[in-house]
Figure: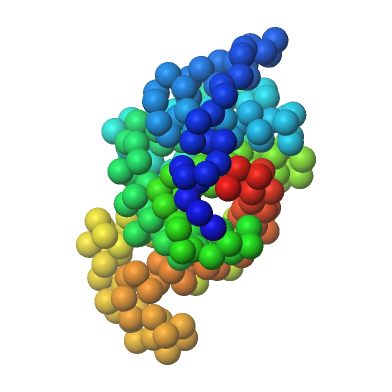
Length: 240
């Protein structure tokens, strides 16, 4: 696989003209006006809407870690309509921190990125920040498709999510949230030190990075995360 920036339509995009859908146009404009990677996201968003029209009526919120600290550890997150300010399905994506942020994620979440590429039938020879940012963006849109089709009720969605998260090596914690806890909370760091013998015996884990990789692998295998990955892979493959 070559780099997206070297050979795909994303390198020299032909930006589409406004549509007759005000929410769709608002989302595209909000992404484009923030620069890269927002322009890339706007192109992928249009492709995603062609695949799943339900995505035309969501709210896309470009942001950054200063405004939303969780975005310091990930590329974005999805919000169910039953929980959002707008009453619509929403995604919040890290645009403001630029490519530097996604270059950092290549290191901190490389195992996850490699697994995502494998779902598209690619190896990680030319994995780069631009590819990762695009896949993460589509992954969050995939969550929205899943919610709209399979979990339109927030309680139902939460129940499924809680059941899946309870199966992880460290129950109830997403990989980014777990990393934040282990790196910034002394109580969690103490827990890890005490837990090393058990973790080593059960999983062969001795370091924080090994635990995060283990957590991430299990997390990616849950049905809701796999749905989002499969959606992202299907939409992104023609561009890559």
